Each structure stands twice: as C-alpha cells, then as structure tokens.
Image 1 (cartoon, rainbow, N blue to C red):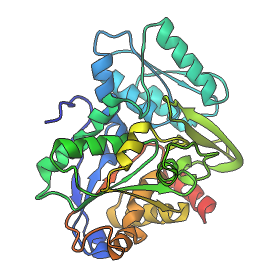
Image 2 (image 1 turned 45 degrees about the vertical axis):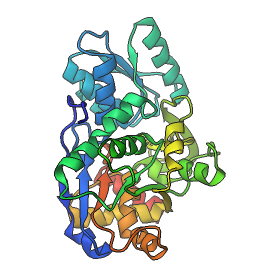
Image 3 (image 1 turned 120 degrees about the vertical axis):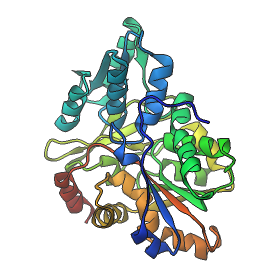
Image 4 (image 1 turned 30 degrees about the vertical axis):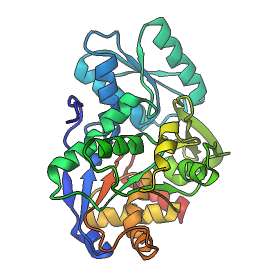
Length: 355
C-alpha cells in the first residue's frame, strides 16, 4: 500500500456516461482537479515536503509561478513551516495572490525564471531550506503513485487503459510506478501531449532525450492572454527538465505546464510496449475543455484538455482501429490532472488564441 497520506485527498472517481457514449466503453474520471491545491501536484510535492522537510524544518523554497508553487505553499501551511515561493516579475497576479493566501512568502525576483531560480537556490543554501522541484524527483513519483493505489481500491476491475497528460513526465512516472506496485504493469498507458509541447513524443521518435527548440503550444500557456512571441521560464528545471511559460499580451502570463525536455525516467518508462504516445492540437485540447465543461460541469486547464481529447477527438477509437488498443477495451480511466489558473475569462482568451 502506498504510504503517502498527509496533504492530498482521495480524489473522486466518477463514471462518465457522456464519455462512455463516445468511446463505447465504461469511462472513469479520476478528478485530480478537486485536490486542495488545484492539481495532482499536491500528491508528489506534499509527499516530498513531508519526507524532506517535516514539522521541524526551517522551511521550503520553490521557484515557481504555477501549480508546483501552489502545492508547495499548501503543504508548508499544513506542516506549519515557512514557505518561500520565488517568482519572476512576469508572474500572473492571480497566482501570486493564491500563493499569499496559502501563507507563503512570495519574493519577486528578476524578469524571468532564471533570476527567480538563482535566488531560490541561494536561499536554500544560505537558510537551509528544502528546495522543491516540480516533477523530476523519485519522492514526487512516489506521491503521484498514490493515484493508482486509489484506483486499485475503487475500480470494480483492472482498467483496460489509463489516459493522462504529459508535461515534464512527473505524473507519468508516478502512474507507471503505481501500476507496477499494484500488479497492473501491463495496462496500456496513453500519454497525451499537444503539438508544440511534445517533448516526450519527440524523444520517443528520436530514440533519445531531446530538447525542443521552443514551446509553441498554447496548452502550456494555461489560459494566459497571449500577446507576444516571447517565452519566459517560470518553473524550475531539474537536471534535464525545463518549464516555460508564454508571456501574454494583456500583461498576464501563464503558469507553465510544459517542458522542453522530458525527465529521463519518463523517457525510460516510454520504452515499454504498453506505453502509447499521442499528440493533439491546441484546438482539439480546447474543444475537449469546452465539452468537458458542458458535459461534466468542471472547468480545467488546457493542458488537462490534452488527456480529455483522447476521448473527445477520437484518439481511443483510432488506436482500437489500428489494433494498438483491444476491442472491447474494458474500463477506461482518464486522469483529470486539473490546474489552478483557469477561469472563464482565460477560457475566452484561449478561444481567441486557438481558433
């Protein structure tokens, strides 16, 4: 059993009749959008903070303008330890406000993520703080693996396939680890990315880790109001991972959910025969977000829409027609990873950008 209790909730597992009608099989939604910090990240980051920091720690520090920072702040508040989140001046005001609402000290340093990260690393060393990465750490994957343990305890039978979105690969690594732990290691896992933020798919095609020349998907902008063509990094890169965010025209920048390079463990997991990597366009991801809002009454970020598009854009049916997924499929599990920066106003901006 996964020993990762502490900060996340056992997210609702909901059957979707509307999605089932589209794919012709039972569909369950693992609603990580309902997590306290707004996304699945609280599972891994909460686990890491509990293991490495604890209640006697000097505190934690994270260079993040997005979901990683929010999860870090939430975990620190629950442990009653200080949290310092370093963000560049280009970070969205909404995110900064949410971080402060969680009790974090927000330090605005520099114009881009590099400046913020340098300050976070300095603070970690000079003040003996625990540095929190966004997705490339074994403790994060242990935390994310709890998703699968919950599925094992709740589903009536083993799934026919699991669908998830991939950014840097942290969720993917955690799910693969969890599947191995519960004896479901051969269950097909469909990794969904958007064109232009497809670092894992590119690595699979190249047969080695590659670094994308740029992130050109609006899905990684996470609802921002796009103006210019300048990309600014707002999340910390680990040894092989870089997260980037697109600067928007109305002064709002996105939190980043995209990586220019996938983490090595994600690439190694992708070599398994049961892993399928698929791409959808920003428009398809946006359509999935809109349909999901209409049918399930839940608004999620565009990056989450990549996973939903596996159903709404016919990817599952195509994979079955190609013989890469079985017919009948059995239970299909879609991990609704969530996110915390989406709003109706940002959704409207995405409609303008993607359409």
